[in-house]
Length: 106
Image: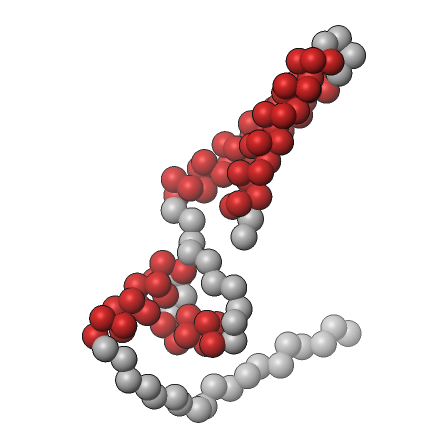
């Protein structure tokens, strides 16, 4: 039987003062990442990686890049025996696209 994940009860409070500007910054960054202010501060304090959510436009671009990468892989396979130079160029383009895709995978 799989172990149940132990629930952590958060019962302790920490208070600290910030300027109104600092408060706005913290709340703004938390909102960008899709986290509550408390969750954002907890993650930041424990040095966990925190990333902004992708916009719908960025997600669409990511999906398009993946499609282009896959299509170029297929094209490169087709040219493998017939035109090695063209295959090399296609593979270079595919690699460039893949490097951009990796940037999305934070």
